[in-house]
Length: 324
Length: 206
Image (cartoon, rainbow over all chains, first blue to last red):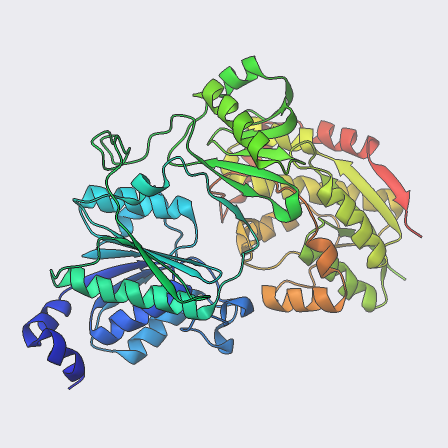
């Protein structure tokens, strides 16, 4: 009875298939909340991941939570609520921030990327490619939502985002709850198609709820894509050549933070030799390069007092090139 | 009347902690540990404004960027936060002794970050020669933010700064004292203490 309305559409046999499938959902915010609830109601087992606590500002769009959940771990509150919605499915949960070192915690038939940052997205992308699992990517900002499914044989996130240095502020640019709900619902709906081996959406879907426009873009594999283009390193992790990094602006423009994608170990001796060092703490240096720059051996650069993203970007490239 | 010394970082918690104690009727001085050049002057500037706002009488600044870099260079990186907090606690106690102050105030909050687990807080407490008041110990962050807004310190605390990048990626969340003592043996804590206290800057806020 529980699935009668859905079985009319997909049939009893497919419903049984769903009961044996597991979807990994990374991020239990607005997208992950909608997607996990819909998949839970559809009878798919879940494996959910989030490291964050519920805060008041989440309630505007994160439909799994109520005021009582504030300051509690999202993953625990989500699991409890989802299990109350459907006690038949298996739900495993882990309060952890997914990164290169722990991404192998993800065991399932499909991964839903419901995160809010490009670093984690690219970690999921490499892992999904390596394990040959479909990755259902979703994002929302302001009135705009984006959906894209990266399948084992097709183009991947890295094909789209390579050379793109996303510039995001720590303070969010805001988002409508209707946009996140549409993206989450799209992710859940497409996940069902993948799990059942049906034809699925291969294009990027981009929509704006400001003027209700939906656009579709064909995507092809990028030549020499580091992750899926045959050039990928054997462990499937991104290798770093000094030019792919993420730039964000610190609190109230206190500075610019530069983080390389993938695993980086900078040779600080080479950097010491090339730039004037103001302070040396062996694994952390402060050097002078137009701005004072804090250089971490794991590749983070912090440009103090800088709000000029372009200047930081070109200086970062020189520092990385010196230290690799 | 007993008088305290409040460790102030420029963030949200320590100012709220100080204000709670002030509202109980106790007076105190404030002490800030600057780790320039690893950060900018944001934390120090904000600490000065916050200290005045919450009614501190004097404002001490300790420049410990170099001292902390010695921990990073010589000690196991994962203990950095406990080692640096123990040094701050020692310095605060020495300044308090010099100034005739009776207790320490911190904005520490159980479980908020890695250095604030029960075992790490215990290890930090052990080097103090004075009673430590931790008004926020069992508050939720949400409650602390509420108080910060009520006390009108929230917007100051949220002002511009670049974060501390000296810390490890994966800090220790629990530590046995013998391991911490082993790490502290690797540096000359007494020399650092004397240098820091000699170089402490002090200004009156009244």
